[in-house]
Image (cartoon, rainbow, N blue to C red):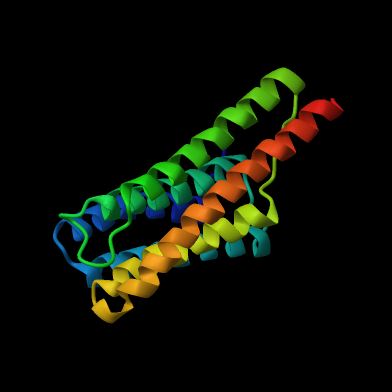
Amino acid sequence: MKFTIPNFLSVLRMGLVPLFIIAVIDGDSRKALFIFLVAGVTDALDGLIARLAHQQSLLGAYLDPIADKLLLTSAYIALSIPQLNHGAPIPLWVTVLVIARDLLIVVMALIMYLAAGVRRFPPSILSKINTVVQVTAVVLVLVSGLWPKLEPLATGLVYGVAVLTLASGLDYILRASRLGGAE
């Protein structure tokens, strides 16, 4: 198994998670935002380098989504704790929805694999939109810690995350039921 540059970038993104959480705990929205944005750049770069340099690997296929979910889940948890968040708060129930949807997808994929031998369960367009909105909401919540006038916009986007997360979860259930019925 070859350790590639994209794999290194995914591991680096995982290593940024504790630094991000520490910045949130310290109430340093600027540093937390910077770390989150650096992590986003490593995510974009690992995919680009993997494709352009033909460095796609099985390890990378696991590391990249794990790093993404670790960062996003950590951000939602940390920014749901009112004492830690200095911007627009993310309601705990939104964080629970985000995590529950991700767990639902993992469990459904495992069941689809074990019961029907389905090996690929790619994300839908709705799921990709949901991820972009989740990331954007984290950025806006962090920015609202620097510019409080943005708190209403950040709060509105967080509620949008809740709606999209529910819709995306239902979409996965419908897709899985169609796949399961076709086997």
